[in-house]
Amino acid sequence: MHPDEIKDIVREAVYETLHGLGISANEPHEMQADFLYMRKMRKGSDLMADRIKASIITVTIPTALYVFWDSIKQMLGK
Image (cartoon, rainbow, N blue to C red; front, top):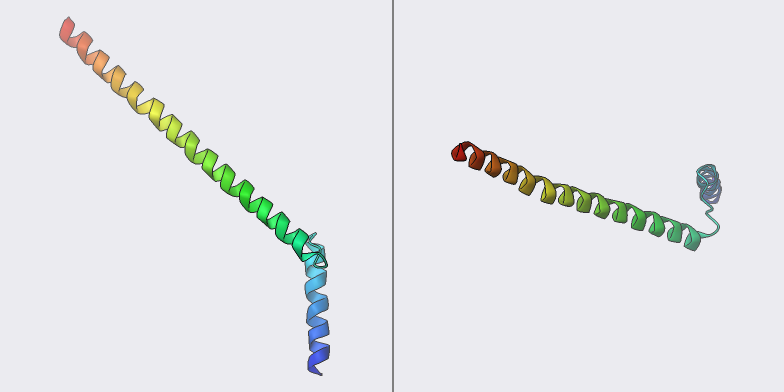
C-alpha cells in the first residue's frame, strides 16, 4: 500500500467519523465557532453555579449564627 492510499483511507475514516458525530469537516471555522460557543456556555454555567453556592453560604452562615445567638440570649434572659 502506498502512503497516498493510506492517507486517503485515513482521511475518509476521519470524515465519516466526524459526519457520524454531526460535525462538518468541510467547514472548520464553523466547527471552531460551535466549540467556542459551547466552551462559553460551560464556563458561564460553572460561574453561575459558583455564585449560587456563594450566595447560599452567605445567607446560611449569618442566619445560623443569628439563630444561635438569639437562643443564647433567650436562655440567659430567663
